[in-house]
Image 1 (spheres, rainbow, N blue to C red):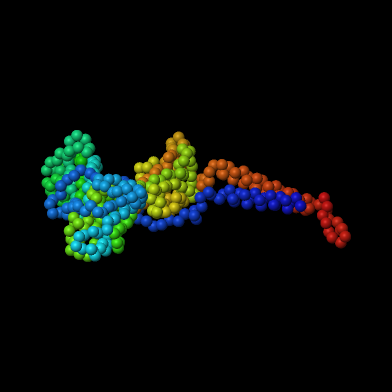
Image 2 (spheres, rainbow, N blue to C red; image 1 turned 45 degrees about the vertical axis):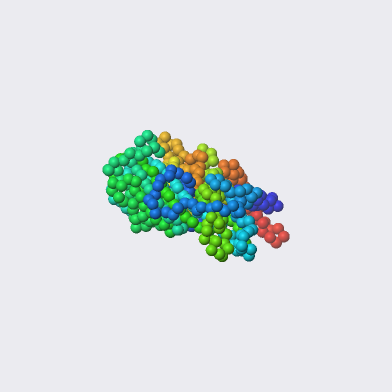
Length: 476
């Protein structure tokens, strides 16, 4: 009876030990998706106003259409039908417009009706960014050298007519001031659409190369919608070298068309933030439609902000300065949020073993956790080394990058941590303590049973035997 009870206790404690060994984050709960890793860590740029430069005449169409119609209205449905006015700002995430025409009353044409109403958008993008190229630089003609010395980014939609201008030289009074330049200063300017290799042949402008030209300029028509990369490659001249990149673009597209005298459109369907001229146009099927002063009404220079950057916060590891992990599976957890609730966030997880000087991608996922094997053949990094005095200085960091397809944000663990040589647990210290206590008790109980068993066998072998009721039994 006592042996049965003891085996029951051992079984129960062993079961508890197995439960304690279970890590709070299960490797099987994380699903990774194969995404292309980001090629840079700066936020992806969206259109915003900048300094006005004047592109060559004839490069782009005019920026506004005239309108004198007084019987049309464009209201913001999400703001209790507040009227849309010139030079206004509307913030989403879903700014819905309603364009409406009053009933027609044209003397001599009693049967004239509005057959359709259109809501149209014309984008006028002017963007200016600047920066400085610092040494080391690789001068000379290196059209396929990667990376370039500096980058800029602009979000364009398919079919957008685009003019780019890059000025460079020495800042006259600090970064952002005017630029001084000489004939010895020269850079090469490349423009790549999203998803292509950054080579000379893939550049939409070939390469804005004009020795002695400052600024360098180029034009192109955007082949796809997305974030475009502008690569600035140092050729010769002063170092450090300042640069100012100006982009001017214009595109026109129809937002919505409906039968009757009104139309509604969610400006989030445009797909990005920007500054637009908004036009409501009526269609009667007569020659009157060609007179824009009669058939259309325009509100100019309206900024729509429907998309916002997400944020991300690394939770573990690194939540405490003394955090020790590995070399077993390391559980990585983070949290994030985005005002655009209908977007799917994608994460890139990186590990550094030199306090952030270099990073290694270990996962692409849409979940908020992943598991890393420090001893894995592909993702492995050496454990934290011992110093000369026998101490170990935490050297591991984790960084999580999040993107919603428009913006990129990052967060690094608060503290560096250690990858251990021996401990293979991914459980908090208090759970490890429980595991050790239970394991010790189980080993002691098993040892007692083994000792008792051996002792009884020894007594039987040393005793004598007698016949009891026809059965030989040993006696001591």
